[in-house]
Length: 477
Image (cartoon, rainbow, N blue to C red; front, side, top):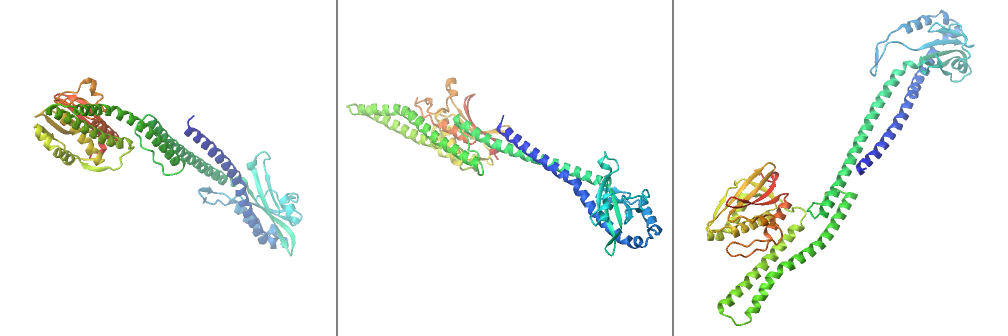
């Protein structure tokens, strides 16, 4: 199972269980809290009525007063109230009054007049100077039928002369409890879903960060050029830095070993030629032969110098993991500059050069590396173009790619060599002289293209060879 899935499952279980216990705990507290609030209101109401009824109870005129009629009218009222979105259209209080012996003197429901309530807790406790309250179910098996009763003493000079009880059915509170539970459930589920989304996002981010680092390590292990993933801080940055440091150390050792081996092999040929010519020059020979061998030494020395310089440039490019200096460069102006620098050689060979890249085209690139790459292409094309031949620079588009194209008239590249021309130290004999180059020019161009996210393509076409530098279209403007 993937790490991201394991992290998400653990987070899911934690959020789910925490959410369940929290919602269940809060839900269990809603019902008693609502009833406690209602009981507090009943206490106030009962004590208010105790003061209002004092005189009638003391004088024994309660049954002759208008209070029974008032309570009957109260029970018939149909209020039209919207309480936090819930409609209330009937009153739900029941009020009854007992004397000091617990006998019911007045009952708003009219059903228990004259009955003995002295054994009910609300009356029993109040007559004894305690807080009298009870909750009684009309149906013992149905909790929703319970009714809260809160009593208050009717006092006369500190003596209890009667009790007034205010009763309210819990069913009248149930709609508010149900609504609160629904809202709590909706909010809780929303928070759980939000928490899971945050967990999924966190899991995705962590997995993506680790995957980027994994891909980087795999690319490095396969010898590919890869940019170090960017992290803002924390353990991932430390891990990425450690991997990069290890890559640099290992790659540096392997790079040195490979180049020492390759350079040693490539230096053998020019050094052998120089040594052979120098040995021959030590003996007597005609001046013409002496000049020819001295020329050989000079040419091989130049070849060694070019090889060393190009190896240094290639080594610098191969060690780069990403471009360090990207700028908008006018492509046509850059090519014109290169053509001007090679003007003497072009004129001497009588070459026809066509430059068909619009002046306004700009390329996002490393100016120094791109100039060197194009210079290598031009040098290579000039080496293989016959006298009075043709060169052509063009711009090509292919969907999400663009190409800087250089065509040179001349012989086609042999099929066996077509796929190897960009290999390090691979070179073909130049027409006319038969000499080979360092074999590093096109390899350098390929490395520069890779840094720019592009590729080098060399193809035989009618009348010559076309080299294309394919680049992402987003780099061109």
